[in-house]
Length: 187
Image 1: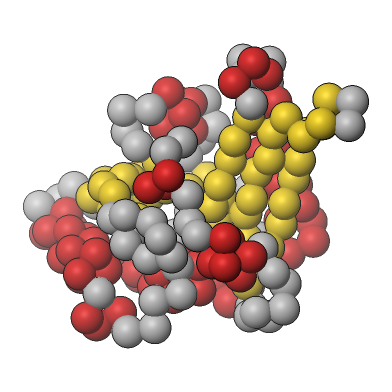
Image 2 (image 1 turned 135 degrees about the vertical axis):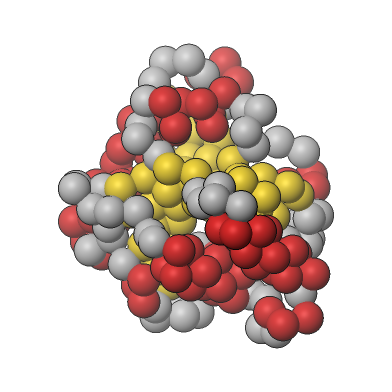
């Protein structure tokens, strides 16, 4: 995954703590082999938006290609829908990665923002990605206004960025949404 793709421990504890923000409820799903964790998916319910967000996922290298990630992801989606009323789940993905193709081609995900950025925050480096969303249980993916609200919520509640008006990544992402909409390339 690379050190630049993992937030610092203090921030990670904040991400998985249910006590920080009552409108952001963390969910963690793990896969085990005997007594050893071989995979994990960390997500959050963004309660104000009835949305979910997958923040992290990992499967030990020698356990990959056995459907472990898909099974954990399915369980996370089930919990988010059943326990939290989530209608869709968003993920930040690299379009060059196999997982992006799986989300879009097999799991019915919609690209919300092609020129999205994971912001520089919590020990992470800014990174160009795409933001995708997948409906859950006949839910709908967000419209243009809801996409803006979703990105705001991710930047504020997941990444802990209080002043969005001065955050360069956020401003670039918002500008890209305006450009995409005016050129007819809505996501």
